[in-house]
Length: 291
Length: 288
Image 1: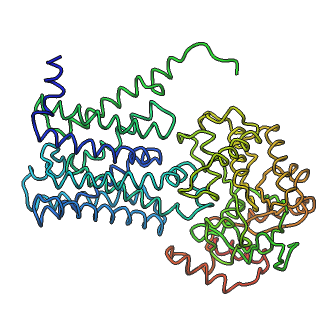
Image 2: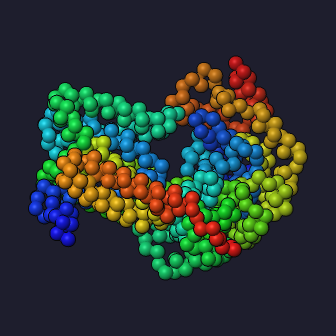
Image 3: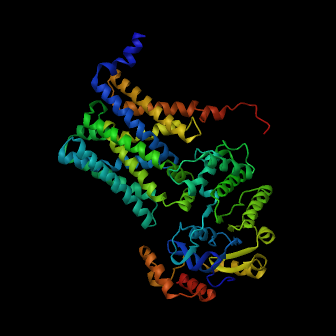
């Protein structure tokens, strides 16, 4: 019992930095996991990835001008994310190019620019910091930022829930009864950018998308209802954060990758043992009903 | 066109309407009116502009020229093709049918117990009792179409647009859906329905509009679906070329200008003109 306490609880009780990391990670999971569920359902899972790359030059520019400061890097990241989202959207609407191609083009340009900007000032250690974050060094300002983003995300999801669902399920129907379709699409992209920016302090630009997508993808193997899907994704996200932080603490591993790998393990397990996963579909009961 | 002038009885008025994608017209110079309370089949080959016309009426697709106007105050229900709907989305039949409450409750309005009862009634009316909690991806094509009809029922609309509702649906379901459609017609609602089966139109639907990008014939279904008209519709289809330039040949390089171009086109040719002549012109341009 004591050993269990020592292993699971004590790190969070004894160390303030672990408490902060826990609070930050849990807040992040609360907001970005439901956003990830909608990304997945809209078949935009890779868009999250692209957006995560896209916010890099903005964050890097903030870093170049002001150093490792929260506000400039956040504002820069947000600006870059919005520019890429709107730019890719505009290209797909005004030219024959589809959004997946324009998104890929924009994020690649953005990523190259970001790496270039980071290398202009810092060492590769700085680059690693921007790319992979430091959940173990969250200060008050970062926690407040993540908390605010979580609140905004949850409120926006609650208010626009019906429109988001309709836009995923039957977009033409939504457009026949309401003008909300296109604004909701951009609002949703805004939430994606916001959560990725919130995540990059803790996990870095590359890993914050992992906390968004992996729990959502894992939860899909367990339920066929949307509301439980979102709740389960949040739960998986929180468990991954706790597991990752503990792994990081006990085995001296970098915290960001540890969190994402925990989510990855849950995803792989879900593929195997989830009720909609591989084993369940391979070994269905031999009996069947008459109708 | 049977209803030439704009009448107060018009549910939908087309005024030299041209709709299309990327500067290619899909519905070309359509004028006329859909009378209030009429039940009209929209027929034509694949790519003849039927679905495009529906989207134009709903307002999802802005016209390249002309206008499609729905009489103000009319509540509209639109049933897109099944293929436009994401069947893998984690939703139940009752969730799908409840979407029909949107015109009444909107984004935030609470769904009252009366609303929920209406949804249940609609599900019963289409013969899906017991399917309320079924996920959409477990429904057959026919069951899915019944659920979508239930959503139209809940919408309680004056103008109902159905895009290929009988595709991938068995005979019994078609019969049931037809009965519902005729019921709406009997209640004085205006119904436009895209159908491929000409025999079904001749037997069950009073009016028809035959499209081949251009309107070929419009009026009583029996007359519209005459062999001569169907033959004309077929020859139109052969005459049109997807890669044909739209108007003047020196402009077709400029992809970005197609909106301006579309407007200019409508100014240059405000009248219907001779379809044969126009088609011949275009195919000549295409050959250059």
